[in-house]
Image (cartoon, one colour):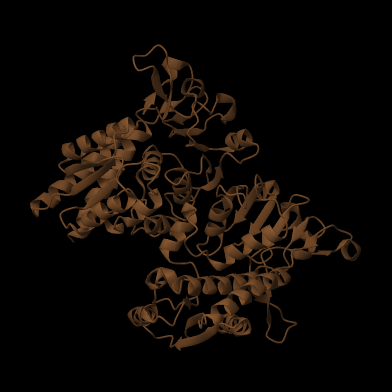
Length: 303
Length: 303
């Protein structure tokens, strides 16, 4: 972590997502090497539907990291007009292919395809994204045999490895999405020495949201509203995790847009004790957990 | 609901679990009659391991209600020394039996049997208890195709049918058990006009628990500590649901023990706006939801 006293006059430390992700990658690469000695290479297949620009970027980054760590990876691109049944058929074939250890269907999917059906068609043992209902259920039940979804799993590791005390902490989560808000709440509330926090899950229906935020020892912003969390909403000394990835207009830039998070980073920095940069905080951790899940899937499939 | 002004001087209303359960039973009986016209009788099989006295009572009550509503039911009792593998084999046979629509394995199980393994062996479409991880996952994801566990499902119905406004309400849940605390939190936080509450899940690791309780518009006590919630922990006008069933010493009684809830009922009554009696609150609703789940399982299996 970088002390920012001198630069900012405040006391906020950066939670170095990139550096922590590299620690996890190092462990993953070791496990890949161990599998290689048995002639096994973990294989991750990405399924991308259509040419959504953000999906192309995300899958590209994940593929690049796979290759760097020695995993085999492959992207299957199907057209925007693919039917739900065709997509499910493709997944069922990948389920049956014993050379494939992990399957990731990149969201978002076209409107005519139900994400719940697609995620539920991935074999749970290859569901390295952790979106199959059986893996979601295991997460809620505290059963460690399932796959933890990558972004909440990454946030958890980020907090643990940054030395944040979670047991007994007041955690406020903003946003009740199935990909971040609900699962991170489920993780942090478990009776486990790595968790054991008191969690309040806030959302668009919450009254007095700012007051909830001000109670938080750890505030996790995952509602997808650009720069929603301002300095007056944060308790001095709190830890803030910014999960948001929002594209907003930026007339000064080449593309006319830029990416911003769910928090007013510059404003919060002097108030908080720790905060994730964005980009460079949660994002790299999501990829690190995906790689870790894939290697674990390969280990389990070949045990 | 019964107004208690005159009797107590307070303003607490009783949430009449028994009466509301009968409303649900009436609907269930109608659905049983509809199935009967097609020659179908919903069949629920209880599996009880050993002779735990509380389990005998619970299964007996559930069987009696099944018969009253026109369901076929049967209890298979296996000995305390049954192995996990033997119990799972029995369940797999019931899974295959197309005459069986619902399977309920009564908790608690002997220490040498892992409950998670047993619950995961019940076919999800016959899991009328809602404990299979895939049904737990669907609950968390807001997917209505699964079975909702009976006690939290019953609490939800009780609140809705008592006219409690849940949208925007501050709900505090005490206890993070897999059977009540976690699933009722998952239900009440959904983006749904029957839910949409802000939920804080408190437990043995929570600091400042009384202060959380005092914030609650709806307080759900499910931690299994006799008479834990006292009047000073409740906001005037709050709605209180007492889920606890605790056996405590009672030298004056024949058995030497009696059952008490997790709240100090008499003390809370003048402070709250509504409160569940205990017994007669949540308990009858749990059975009502079990019957409803079983009829739904039969409807789905024969659709």
